[in-house]
Image (tube, rainbow over all chains, first blue to last red; front, side, top):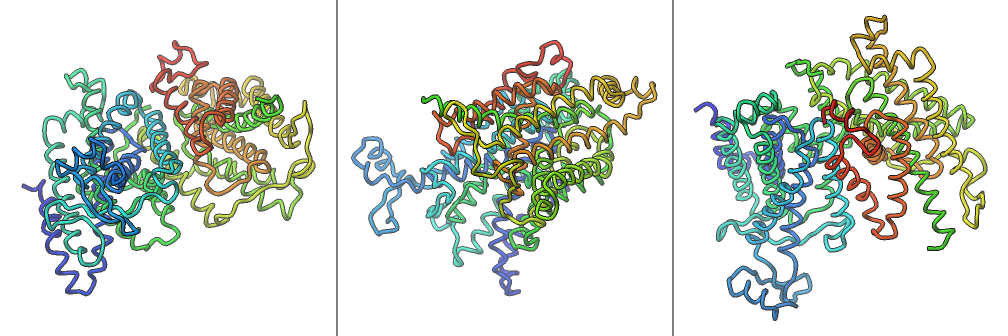
Length: 337
Length: 296
């Protein structure tokens, strides 16, 4: 039961914190706590990959951005002009389109956020499989550089493509109705509900990973971390396990990207920045590498403080210094040279 | 394409290529000495250019650059002595994370010191308007300085590693650490020297190119990844191959503008990197036999 303590704590907080903070007249903190929860979700995905399987990824922000951008693009693209098209007509007949009005009050017709989000997550998974197969043959420095390169490509594409808004990114992303009346969206009225949504999603994400790492695949991942050849000799299909956990990590980042984008109503190329990927790595390192609860706590706390502007202009410096300090101070000295 | 334009692209490719090659050589020196990739490599070039540009208003240019190279060398040595030496036994993953952390720390401290403004260095000879005409195309004299400095660095390094006792000791150390230490070579000292040397070369490259491309606290990341691309492309650890690979990448990038929009220029080199890593991680000039001994 102990291993589920953090899951339970997060679930309780999801419902207990909004009334508590409202009573303390600090409900404004819920906004940053919501955003921190989505960033922490992306960090959890990296924790499974880096902490448990020992495979570094410097491209986690790339998958976050793929999710966010794809969902934003699909749910904001106005299909009204193409409503005569049989494909658009068919989607409309199936009830997969949502009607609204654009910034000028003209009627607009776009993909419903549910479809956009599912497409976005599937796209991220597809990219993760295509990138993962060659990338995961690499180890150590090469893996780090290749994933860093992947992340930079995603950022350059986001920044350089006019259809994705260039340096401005995409805005006016519609609310995402998970259930009727339960919308992922910004604004004061939806603040408490959205906090609960994000923390419940986080608790579910954590629960799934806690189960994973304490099962046969989880043990296989740890064996892989300790020695790939040895794990292979014991019958672990190392290539498949590495790919699976890489794709899983990417999916976590994509879900986080989709939800945060609909919550903020916008996404910019900064989300794909290499520095963002470094932050995810820093959070997993500070959390204690193979430690889901630690990663979760570090992710919530550091992102919350960063979003509140506590670090000021030292924001990135704090993450850099933390990386070095954790590596200097952490135990587990083991020669691999 | 007109001949002058072709020449213009060619020279621009040579310039960037030789800078990437210099950064790649920095990667190689540290890789040969320690077996790690120093993710803070690009920051050395940034520091060289930034420190020189600060000092250039008070000191003669040559002195300012010498001081900048010396200061960056100290940063490289300090980085190894204070941090990396203590982490080295923790394994590759820890070293990667630590050098990434150091690169961010150096970059952010540079931001605190110099702010976000773009800086430049005076031209080594002439001014920004002086030009040398060759076959109808015009180049800044700085172009020849960059090419000359890179060539000199490569020649000096080759001589250092082939002819001097310390250079031979460093090579001995990278070939066989235990064996070298039995011959009375201090391996820790050689690693420190490698970091110092690598930082100095980065700083020289940063100074040479600053008048042409200007410098900024954040240029290190881009230079670092391109330098690594070149190092991997040529075959990690092989400095002469890095020069060839650097020139090829510089050309590819410079001529890519014909087919790829400017905004995607950086994507070209990263696609080259990914292609090299996927297809032939031992590099185009690396032999398969030597590659088989390494751990990719």
